[in-house]
Image (tube, rainbow, N blue to C red):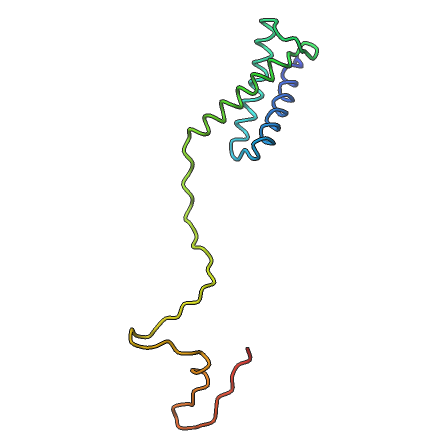
Length: 137
């Protein structure tokens, strides 16, 4: 079995057009393998159709470049349309947003919030009036 140049050139044309699509669109995501397969098969089919109909004015040897490029873009468009019809997966368990807000809890509903410095500088309940050393900040 001899491998003709049509398959090799179809891979090159398909890769080129998928690269152009990703460059224009900006991203392809998980559908990149499907885009590659569709573009390569489209380029190969385009070459075959053009060879049967003898309609392509621009050729590289026996490879019909314009028709293979056109059908490769049809394959890319088909994958893009089908990907738009499929619903996206729901996001995994959403993590709570990181917050830097400070909230103070109260011991009971009627208590007023205490100041941290006032609580640390308070005299001990044992009657000793010597202040306790504070930790460095």
